[in-house]
Amino acid sequence: MEHKKVEDVKLYIDGSFVDAGGSGYFNNLNPFTNEVMNRVAKGGKTDIEKAAHVANEAFQNGPWGSMKQKERMAYIDRIADLIAEEVEEIAVLESLDTGLPISQTRKMVSRASENFRFYSRMVQSRMHGDAYQVDDEFINYTVYQPLGAVGLITPWNAPFMLTTWKVAPALATGNTVILKPAELSPLSANKLAEIMVRAELPKGVFNVVHGYGETAGDALVKNDKLKAISFTGETVTGKTIIKNSADSLKKTSMELGGKSPLIVFDDADFERALDAAVWGIFSFNGERCTANSRVFLHKSIEDKFVEELRKRVDKISIGDPMNPATEVGPLIDKGHFDKVTGYIDIAREEGCEVVQGTVPGAMKASNFVPPTIFLNAKNNMRVCQDEIFGPIMSVIAFETEEEVIEMANDTEYGLAGYVWTNDIKRGHRVAQAVDSGMLWINAQNIRDLRIPFGGMKGSGVGREGGHFAILEFYTEPKAIHVALGEHRIPQWGK
Image (cartoon, rainbow, N blue to C red):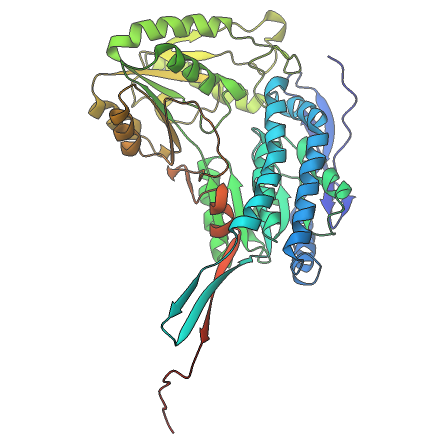
């Protein structure tokens, strides 16, 4: 399928598209063809410092920090409208950039528009404090104030939706933003900057610095003008960001890796559990933090479930991400492809039977990993402990509720979990016993913007979503105490 040429991407600082300070560029490759699509300005420390200065000025001395809420929400609503107008173009850019099938990027981009609308409503309805009266002597009340300039570091999987999930609450609460997108998926972040221009957002309020994590990302985290860093990505990088944020006492929010269990008991709705298990790991090309990469099957249904899994992986449509019929596209780049396929070799060494779909012959030179199942897996294997982040499912058998809870929790991660059973008491018991920030009972990964999103253990620190973002991260509570009368004050030295 032919598409218009993708233009080179510049940085967006202080309301203008500019070259990087070092005037360098890096190549952006198409995951489907591994050919260069365009070049991207390679930002570094100098660019981060410039962006931090203008973001801080826009907050401290510009209109944004002191703008009336109603006026600020008009901008947020306008951004949502503009995203809705551009869904098809953004979806195409996202598929070209990431290899995600166009049928899936269209849905994600539509959700991005709702992120802004949701936080417009949320700020107006929930960003208020409390008042506490102490007899007739005091009234104490709280207000929530924006932090100032904040840094947002976003991932390459579902980049536009996940970027707006951070940008929307940050801007809606009155902060200014420096966005450092993943270098592997810069196109939709650039499109968001173009939308900000059309929305006539004041200069310096929203800035984008492209570049590599070890340069631009490191400078962003260490810049003392920024009050907070929100990061979505893998766990090792998250730990480094927390350490590097400590010197300036930045607030941090970390949405990190996962090795999420999907537990199927023998009384579960078999077909629905099967649908959920297949979709939950093979959609998004398997590059999803909440993917059910470990599937625990009760021994009494294991053989039947595995038989159906074999049939499913053989029929999943693999191909050009721009084809609406494609269900699984190529992985983001050759480096990630090598990592994921390396784990297939490890699985064989560890004793797993590897069951795979078939990549069409003409596409074998690309970054395709077909839907893959590791059978005869044991929970202590590397392939069941490491986050692979590809379309790979490890199948593990269990016999008792206690046994499967222990195995589900035997991992450094704790992001998501799924329980399938028609015994609702057991469903609640298991969901509450599994160490994960989010659990679904008899449901796939349905996202509700009102609930907290985040994990336990190595899967993160803090929560995104709902009022948790606006009241716990992007604002600071301030307590104000007012005397109602002349209460007693000790008179020292009188």
